[in-house]
Image 1: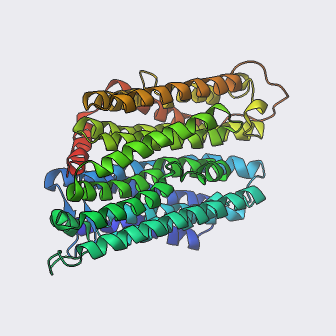
Image 2: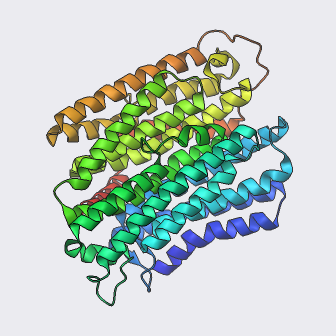
Image 3: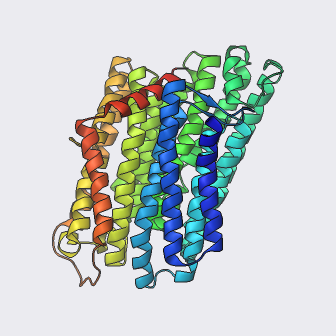
Length: 490
């Protein structure tokens, strides 16, 4: 049964990419991609149900592995891909109508979208750390072409910057994996594999603490670069700003969570092997640093998509900070925040795409009076900003409140106060800019129109999900998060 699930999760997006390479008609491409991402999403729920019954799933050879942590993040990532695939239909049709995209290029977009989903599944299902690294590097290559999709000079430059910075980071992560391998080579039983995470966890306390500390520093910098953790975040504003809006959304909701998953795996191993709060301290420092670095760039921003990119830097910091606190309550808050942030980022990046298409610009001072030009998207934008900045009754308020509570109850008083200061300042910046975009009168005539009703309905459902998570967390979701918390506890 486990191999059927692994095959579905890995094989479905691969099949989708092959079919997109063979059939280039727009409608066929849309059906293929929505079907492949939808089947992957359904398979993720099946996987989560099996994990709840059996705790862990292994392939016969041990190369593939799933537990509560991977199952939870697979649901988030595959769900994000499904929403993006659905939204891409209307978005790209409007782009073709406005002559922003050539219709013959659609097959490449959908092909790369399927490959992107496959590479993320590869990371999330790999028991072997070598496969995990290969999958992480493959996500860079798949998304680089999507960042450069419009073939503008600025988008090509952003893609190159993304590839270079992330490849350097992933190379450092490889050094960390190699050090971990050599540390385990003589203690892993002959029946195991020194690169299998499940084998490493069995002998964690026998690994050399000094080597693992050095390995974790390389891994934190490497996968932290991929997640956009400050100060390794510099690729993020350019890549998010230049990519098509649905791709920016999937990078912020999917790719970031995949990179954080990789960090979590090594955090669990190092915390068990080394103890003493080594990994936790680094996480708290880098988490607060990311939040702090985001503040001035948000307060002094001109470009709305770059504003959202720095919000992503902030929220990665929030999650890493929570993981660093290291209590079950903090873990629960971090994992809930993974979901809330993913939903909010998809909502805002897709809405930002609507605004840009209507106004022909993403520069904020050129976008005014949006409530009169594109009333539905403008409403979603301003309410979505309240959601992403942690106002009640939205889900992000609940996860951030949980994290702050964990900080105070665990004795991390000063870090928790800094946390509150950062999120409050960022809220002020977001409300200042978005209120100027939404309210008032347009400074110039705007001929653009709002998105189609199906696209707006999808965005409304995302906002509804954020509202629901702020009021009520379903018992099945609570159980799924708790299973992931149990994995983080080691």
